[in-house]
Image (cartoon, rainbow, N blue to C red; front, side, top):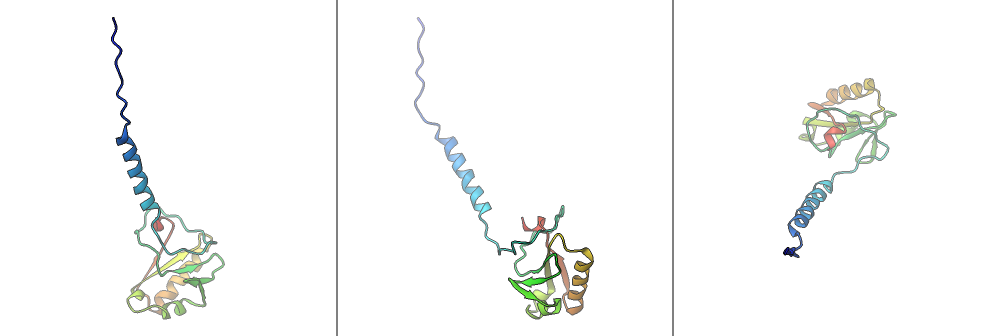
Length: 128
């Protein structure tokens, strides 16, 4: 005679708890808040870059127009005039991918000439 084994009727709750925990971690990481950038901006791609958020950065659009916190800026010196002394030590630029490199270099030089100690270019990799 063969004996019929009874299967336990327990639910595997450990696997369910693991999945819920992983989903919680995912949404915590994915939901990190950051200052939104202009919607028509396409960022430059790089392989490696220091990971800092672009908080108070000068946004340079493909047509050469510059903006800071949603307001148009006429010249790089106007942007520096809005910053305090501590912020002038490290100035960040968020360029559009379609912006010619010559214009980006000229803006960087203008910022250095106006008193910025260091100019950092923020790209797509740096925003992750």
